[in-house]
Image (cartoon, rainbow, N blue to C red; front, side, top):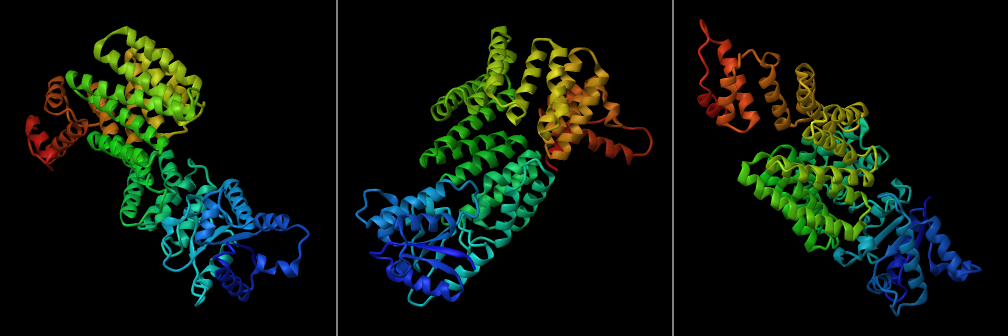
Length: 528
């Protein structure tokens, strides 16, 4: 059976530890505890304790005095439990996985788990009643099924499905970009409703979905985790979890669905929650995300709105840079992320004002970002796309094609690859290669459609409609039709639906085709 070591405070945890040892030995477990020291007589008690912590699953019998010893080195508790507390911190510190930690807190009935220190709150917490023995069988079953090392699972047995925990362990063994990781996340999204363990493992779960550019899967997982958090009493130290889900999940998918106002609200709310709980890194990520949303809003607005959104984005970007530099330094990956967004901001300012000084600044910042970012990473790939756009602005079309062609050939990140085809089409148009531009736009439109990026796909579709409408519709779109639709609505999704609605209606008519009433069609599909 499994080898166990009981860690407790002799001053107020002895009776509970003695009852727990007796119950576990009845289940066949090999248990070490200091009640056996008179008969064992080890040559060195500290060495005996170190061996127990190193080689065995540690059951921490929680009591007030034990918590005092664990939370402070100044506790007046006996030397043994203070030494065990240091060994416990060491065991947790050097554990690299999120699961199978080998430390299991055991608390009395009706114990307020928020009183536990942060190092224990994230572990599986079991209940044991020393008077009745209640909870011993559940604990024994958990220790046996997990090989005696299930302590790192981040939810108690009553609130987390064993199947979910098993799938999360499997997910940790996979690279996020592997197809099997995406399959696991889809299955978790189906069975994980109400499971707090899934919410606490949000980073790894949503990271796999993002690696495949699956916006629908990110949305489903995010909203499920937010529902779970709203219905679950969180432990101390978990207040910033909601902030992370809002920023890395909700704002992420809303941005890609082009619901920009809601994306900005999610990023702002997440940042405020992270600041409240002093999670400085998540707050910095939220500020950078908020700046990104405003930059996208600037790209869509009219001249006055664009200037307003650019100023808001600039202010947030400065804050993000200050926060990341304070946390990670000026030579960190995060500093490279900020430099990338700074370059994109300068490009947007150039496109608004036409001042080539902004374009020069953008190119300098892009080169700075390239030094800081890890080659092959997602942010590095986005930087290559940005450098291609800068080449387009500088009319260096062939140089720009080299950047995005490299990203396309690497084929590492589906969203970035789709955007690279779109940008390469713009570069081809700059060099008057219309046929190549249409081919790339068709590929980009298909890839965005598969990923569920309807706005980006419709943008590509409309670009093709302007260049060669016969490739995507039977409707003979004239220049006047294009101008009318662009005047009626800025949303390419609405324009596309209006054209397809006219195409379907025309196919059902007999005789001559009647001319389109675009105003009527736009209103019809807008409220359909």
